[in-house]
Length: 309
Ligand SMILES: Cc1cc2nc3c(=O)[nH]c(=O)nc-3n(C[C@H](O)[C@H](O)[C@H](O)COP(=O)(O)OP(=O)(O)OC[C@H]3O[C@@H](n4cnc5c(N)ncnc54)[C@H](O)[C@@H]3O)c2cc1C
View (spheres, rainbow, N blue to C red):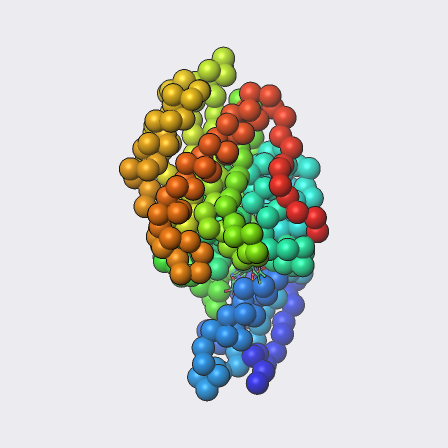
């Protein structure tokens, strides 16, 4: 059985929106297709599956495939692939955690076609790119079917597991923007994965920190762990345990204790029990936080653990 009738490749966001509108909910955005094609093929029993009127491919829209510095922001198009993120020297220096998270998505084939926008629009609380974008306090440029175009905070994009506030039958996620790393700032991403696993982590953790002038205290911190709930969220209790405190084992241990008290991961029958995930919270914080601090202190950021592709 075929899964769609027509395949369009518009060159502008406006054309993509017009096409979606013309199908009145019968068409859907596609980027790399690594999530969507599996959903279309296996999402519903065969007897209930209707072919879509059209797929609207956004990977030829130039404003959606660029990585650029603009007006004090770093702007990453939603159709930028994980491989392109990994290969960007600009992003490695300015948003190291994002490069580290895109660098561990799937294998090379998935990273070569899978996009950052698809990772976010799929709306899973464990999406690796999503976890880092939340820690970077990113905003998303959303073009709506009714003609509106708006920048929204990342956390406004999620309604539940797999349920996005961007309706890919009507809206287009165009780009993400965030502030590039400044002096005394650093970020890192680490995750725990099943050894044989290629899709979605047991737990991922992205950390961003800013230190004070003397590099002795946490001036600011942002942490996102996923999945620890139905939607991606900041670990604000852990952030508060860091801000204003001296960098070192004492503060790290207190932050871990707060994390144990306040972060409640769920059991997943495919990945891990809640108890195991809970233990891994400490492991990840102890790996990611000191690395982000070191990057903030030295200004040197070489992404770790990224795959080839
Ligand atoms: C073998 C395998 C391993 C994987 N491993 C990982 C992993 O380790 N970590 C991880 O996080 N993910 C993983 N994934 C999931 C997936 O590859 C990523 O989430 C990827 O980023 C999805 O991007 P895509 O471009 O392929 O999205 P698509 O499949 O094209 O789209 C996904 C959804 O988003 C919508 N959409 C896409 N782009 C837009 C847009 N610009 N505007 C509006 N809606 C849009 C589509 O309509 C669809 O609903 C894996 C997948 C596979 C098949």
